[in-house]
Length: 390
Image (tube, rainbow, N blue to C red; front, side, top):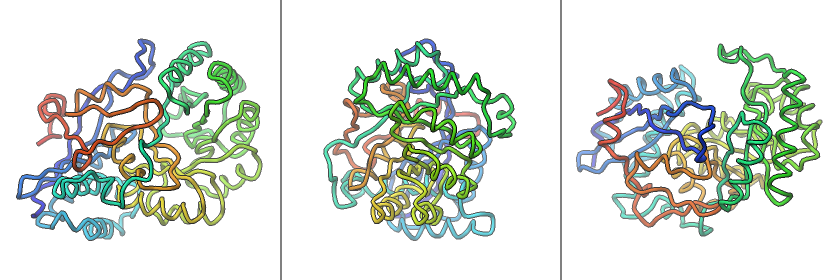
């Protein structure tokens, strides 16, 4: 079997809502899917979906060139192909966009491998260590204090036991141009605290509340915010400072009494090394569609296991993102939870041939081969942006 072509798809599709008419985000978002074709008709699917339109288009353009690089390769040789792509980009930068591209292709290659062998991907790593992969989800960021409490309570009623929110959303106006002041107004700080106080009261003491800072504060602001939220029994404080400075992260780590989580912007095992060696985080959360795919996140999980640090993939994009993370984590002893966008992910159903099986606070993997789903090609073609489809 040989790889014939790699196709990037840029698709506009519904966001996974929590069944509310008041969500402040746009109705649709862009998803980047990767299709790897072979000469024997077996197709694998991956995902890269980024956080901006610019990033999505950049990786799509690069994938077209990488298609030529690996055309003719045996898709069974996943590790060889991973390194071939990785090393071809080292003079441009071996992380970030490079590992995004690798991720989409790597996930698709594991999908192909599972389909060829007739096994789910989770069975290719020694089999699962648990029945059902634990997950967490989000309420609607940017809600009023009252609405956030209501949304959180509705999530708990679905059986979810862990909720993450950014209580300081929406972000500063100047952040639209990429500028980080690193600070918050007193009004915004107070509103964030009010939101979390109401959220804790609504869900009770037994529910985990995770705080997402989105890596946008300076060290003193992050420390002050963490201390303000400590009374509400915060399960973790995520990305308190921009990812570029481990020194700033260390400052926060040494001055707060809440667990720290980092990792959605950490790419590959090499960037994870200083986090583990310097004891900078209690949890790590690489994204399977950005860090280097299933191959890489499994290595990162094993590294973290050696330090007894739980791993909790950031998988809040599309259905392949969620499933790839779940398959990778099924056999990981130190797995905490896989991130999902909402308690109900029905909006994904229009894109896929089998809905995700989420019950309570777990996702259950099927016995179908590979990822366990295929994308609906007719829907994809009807909703793909011009020039970004087969």
